[in-house]
Length: 503
Image (cartoon, rainbow, N blue to C red; front, top):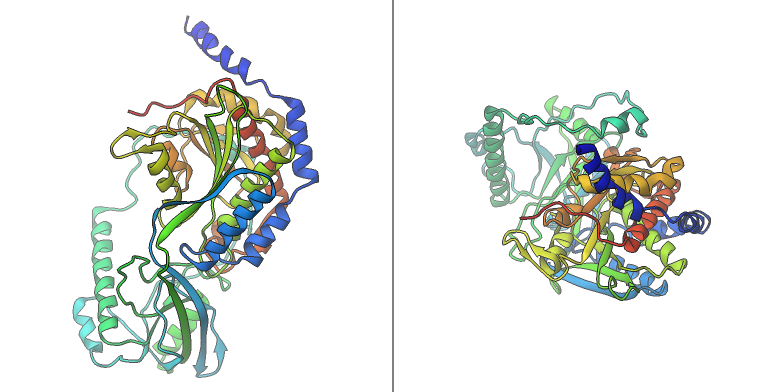
């Protein structure tokens, strides 16, 4: 009886999800033979540049994207405010070099939202060795106008693994496995207490350095071979307090300065940081555009696809996340170029301010879909069939995470069949987090992120080396074709995709 019940449940799902193979052929042909992936990637990375949240370049990227959508003939193109973000910030000049014991260029970049220096500064570097509050007093009155640094654990190990990788079939199968046990905490209570104490000491040190009038602080960063991972020093809040200017430098260059000082060899560094604060508009924005639905009954329903536009500021945000934006733009371009007349409206959303907390997508959801805290449904909650997201670099799509939604598994397995030869055949019930589909899934709207080959994503994103050269254009072409197909199938389906309960 249970088997018969399952067959009765699954049969209507499979019946309405038979794939239009002629349309799949047309999507593949348009996407592969007439791809605009490389041109879009060039404009978004090399031409527009880094797109830190609130920056002028991010504003330029929004304007360029909306013009492109209009050029393609999409409807209802708009730059839509999701809420208040804070102050914008641009780097106008950044320079740092070691002058003694000999001249050497230093790979380094201002931390996000740091204040600038008072012109060019030059001083012997003071190594601050502080492990307790009492250690601060050793430096009181001695570091005004100085460049300072504190010890950091930046041990570099040889890279024995390959620079890039693709998932093997065995590894993809393993991604289907779900643990049912309670995952132990990564940290012991003692380790957590130690981390809290260190944070408190770090905050006291930051206040102390500002009060003492330090000219510049140098910090090391993880990464190797000159790769600098971004962090932030200040706040983008409208009521931001002044901060000591900070530059984070490559681990190898940080280590050289540290070892020289520890061995009694004075080091002189000169540097200059000029920044610009933008106070004309504190809002954050998303870019929206549509292919309108044509079915009399279903055109008010929506299928969404999207990716986040913002990046960090030393590289050009190529794999995080220009790649995702370009793939989603190409996917909707393919559908528009084919002249599809979808039953449901297809809406692309290019999100802002993801890196600081999924602000763009969460702001959209809060405004139009649902209030998660109040469990309050809004106008679009019952209209959205699915949201598809891409934000794990430029690697090939190998499958999809369905966020525990058992009901959609047979649907996606059927829809991916025409793309098995392109490497996409894995549907996993696993959850994956930390990007914009989470905002939709959190309010009970189907939100999905794709399984992608990592290539070298984890080694390069959020760094100065996240550049055009690291993008995998053939993989991005494959991804755009698959996403265009899934979006089309979702738009043409008789019913919206099944949902998990949201109570």
